[in-house]
Length: 223
Image (cartoon, rainbow, N blue to C red; front, top):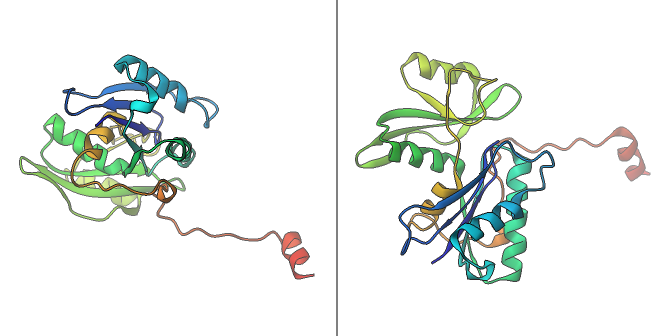
């Protein structure tokens, strides 16, 4: 099993390679900040990660993709790269939510107790999910959902730490924590994750999609 993972949901884009049978830790290549052109950078990071481990592209058997929430453009770039790769090669493809990565990273660091994991959802709101982390594992205490900044700050008032990426402007009190492709690679090989069809990969986006036609366009359609 040779896993390559892509995590592009935050300003710390990363690619990792991992062979659980022969490697203790994944090899991770990080690009920070994200490239100015949001669609670029994927293949340069992939090439560098493969170079460091000494693999050829055709040796990769599993491809894990971070699904966010987070930078919609970055996530789409990673998904597009994964779909193009899977169209040309027989790969097992898996999607990994960023919130799962953050919870696992805290567990591996030795964090214990309740935490709130948060992501900037724009419009002054957050995506957030509460977890309990203890020696027996990780337990989700709520579904990932849209929440207000005031509600997230109330968790801090209740002594529940808030962790998340790219929150320094929106919520300076939050503890910086970025999803990592190395964690995505580790999670992807666990029994909790199942193979998905490449075309089924999609960013985690909790807002309702609304589409409003411009008056001129609508008038043309009606005539």
